[in-house]
Image (cartoon, rainbow, N blue to C red; front, side):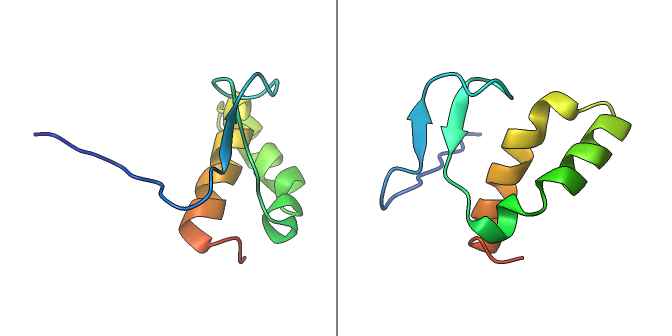
Length: 67
């Protein structure tokens, strides 16, 4: 099985270290960013606190930056 993902459009990811996750940064909307404290709380509760940035990027991608 081969899976390919294409982001297309403008580049939303930049290489570099952000201090969270696996070493990339993503531009997330203000609507997604406002949930960061809540995301951090539950990510730490479930032992995945180092993935807060990745979770926010996933929310951005899946919701289009809306709620």
